[in-house]
Image: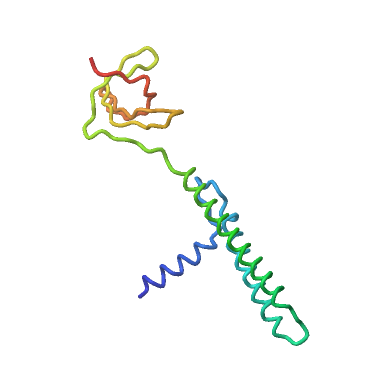
Length: 154
C-alpha cells in the first residue's frame, strides 16, 4: 500500500516540481505555468457558474456558454502548449545514439599523421558530427575519433 501512495505523491509533487536537470531544454517553470493557469481558468469558470446562482448576478445562457467555451479553449491551448514543450524537450535532450558492433573490428586510425591499430567498437550516425568509438590496442584506451579517420585494417 505504501508503494501506491508513494507513487501518487511522487506524481503530484513532480507535476509541480521546480527542479531542473542540467540537460533540460525547457525550464520547468514554463511547464508549471501551463498547469497552474489551466487550473485557475477552470476555477474561474466554476466561480462564474456559482455566481450565476446568486440572485444579484444574472448571466444569460449565451454568456455562460461563451464563458465555458473560452475556458475550454484556454485549457486546450495550454494543454497543447504543454505537450509541445515536452515533445521539444524530449527531442532535443536525447543523447546521441551509439551503434555497437557485435564484435570489435580491427581498424587503423589516422591521427595527426600517425597510424594506430585499434578495434572499432561502434559509431554515431549524426550527420554533422559522425564519430567512431574505438579502442586503441597499444594502450587499451577507448576514444571517439572522426569517422573519416578510420580505415579498415590492412
